[in-house]
Image 1 (tube, one colour):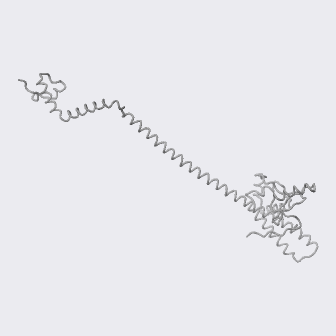
Image 2 (cartoon, one colour):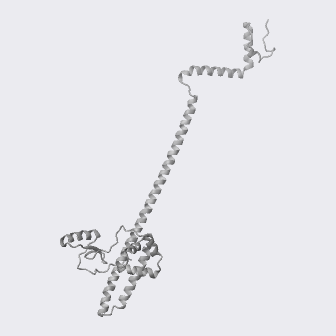
Image 3 (cartoon, rainbow, N blue to C red):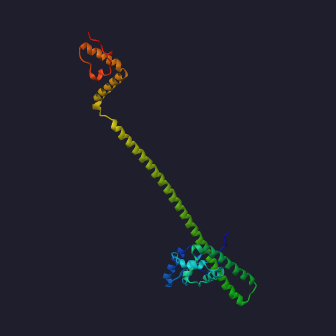
Length: 272
């Protein structure tokens, strides 16, 4: 469940909904009073202007890996002391930057909750103490609690940004994978088309070897006729040879030697 924003400790100050609006107002006021004003986020979740310099960390600040590792290796007690020091605004800037690194957000968030629960318990324990000393302590304790509340919200915002960043990265990886798969399918389809084209071209070349121009049709018919005659001779060779020998005898010419060898003397016709 989302925590309700605390009451504003400075209700008399003007409120601005965003950092951009507060910075714009600060520039306008500075021109009027010639004194720089600094926007800051309040525990009431609104922005105010102050003459005190802003203690915000630049959004483009990058933590040193050695600082991150050093904070990661701190014991729970040492880490709690560091978080408490940071909440009081007394921690060195390089450690403040490292504390906001992704790897430390969960631990930072948990420790801030423990610190806030502890200060709330102390405030409850001394709720009926009306002495002046307790009154002064309560003001400081409430300011410290407000500072912790601000950092809890900052921690949540950073975690939300990291979650969104991871989601965008996953979406980008998913889109890249889909694009790669589509590219592979396109390459496979192109490769198959290339192979089909190559086979078609090879077949065309093979058919070209057997194609004869149209003006050779007459020669082809002559060859076809000779082949048909040869097939007829092969099928009825003996009968054909006998007929040929008889015709040669009638005309009184010698039987061709290449034919005579297929006949015996009994097959030859008897001359008168």
